[in-house]
Amino acid sequence: MPRQEIDLITQSETGESLAGVKIQFIAQGAPEVQFTDSNGYAKVQIPSKGDVRVNLSKSGYPVQDFIINLENTQSTVRVIRFSQSGQPNVQQVVATPTPTDTPTPTPTSTPPVPEIVPVQQSVENNGLKFDLQNCQRNSSAVTCNLLVTNTGDEDRKLELHGSYSNAPSRVVDFSGNEYKAVAAQAGQDQNAYTASVNLIRDVPIRASVKFELPVEVATLRFSL
Image (tube, rainbow, N blue to C red; front, side):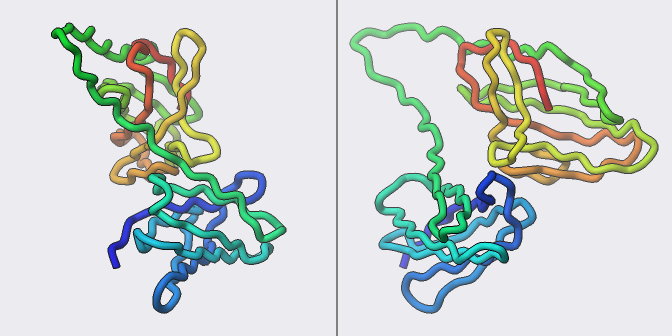
């Protein structure tokens, strides 16, 4: 039977990540078992047709049980908040579709998409120095590339948070609108939840944060 890859994110009733959740998928054949990582995240493959029963087990909670049927939705991401009743709150996250061009009877010129101009080029806070290299735009997707240097006395861990984190990285435009990161990369670690890397003192490491921004936004302030 054909299969499709989906993302599961498990959380407590108040939104904290639930690590080590046992996941069982029941469709045809023997149940398949996986576990969430330290961020409550698991990438799994399930049959792309028909009902798939999902059982989630975690100490301190009754078994959480729900159904996924990929024929009835285009979403491949589920955020599951556990409940003491055993009936989890399952939210489907649907990616914003890429807009398509509408044919017009006469050719029209399209105004250019403005380049992103960040206000801060260098920020130092709590023993970490963030040097912004550039921000690259591809339609509504904007990726900002940084060099991060540990200026403290000891090695330390850097974490950059994506959209499924409890505290994602943010940018703010000059109209006061806030936009949360959809993905982050620190060194070689890239994740929609939390990307992390160990920083050696005075050795810069490449990192990046990706946002979905309206095409008219051209100037940003960062809140990493």
